[in-house]
Image (tube, rainbow, N blue to C red; front, side):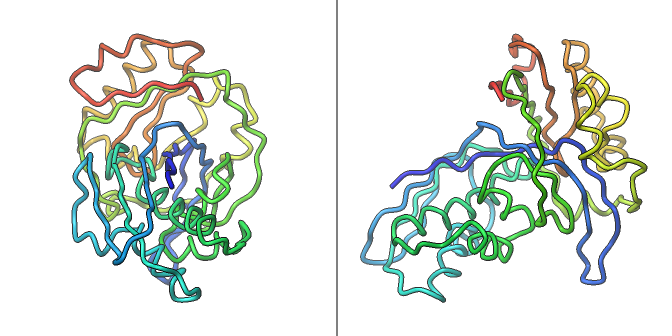
Length: 267
C-alpha cells in the first residue's frame, strides 16, 4: 500500500523555556502542506527498508519508518514488511519530513493490520518517535506547545492562499539551531496572533530561530526579504531552518529562485 507523508510549516515559533529533561518547551502553529514523500509498505519474507530520492544520512536501521514498525511490533504480532521510502521533502530543512514519515508509517501499519488504533493511541506511539511526529497523525492545523507534541484545535484556513517554499540546500541540525537560543516567554502567543489579518503577522509573528541563525546564514534573510518584495503577505523561516516560505494571494513565477530548490503549491 502507498501513502504520501507531507511536510508542515511553522507559523510563528517561540522557544519558551528549557526543560529539566534537556528538551525545550515551544509554542507554534503547525500547518500541513502538500510537499510529500512517497512511502510503500508491502508484505515480505523479511523486514527490509530501502530508500530512493534524496539521500538519507545515517544508518537505515535508525530510520523513523523502521522505528515506528518496531514500536507497534512490540505490542502486536505484526508480520514482516518491505518498506520503500522515496524521499522528496528536504532533510534538515524545518519541514518535519522525517517526523511525517514515522507518523504515516504508524497510520498505514494500523490500516494494513486492522489494529483499530484511535488517533489518541497513534499519537501516544508517535510521541515516542519524536517531538513533531504526533502532529502528523491528525495532520491538520494545530496550535502546538510543550515539546511540540501537545495540541489545541485552531480555526486557521489558508486554502485560498499559495505558498512558496525556498530551500537553499543548507543543512541546519537541531543542535546547531538551539545552540544560539535564549528561551523567553512571548508577549503574545501564536494562536492569538494568527487571528489577525495575515498582512499584520509580519509585525508580530516571529520565529525565534531567525535571530540566532540569520547572522550565520545571511542568505536566509535575503530570501525572506525577496519573498516580501515579490508580494508575500507573510514570510518566515520554518522550524529550525533552513527553508524559508512566503504566503501569497496568487501564484508567482518561482524561476527567480532557480539556484535553489523552490516549491509552490496551493495551501
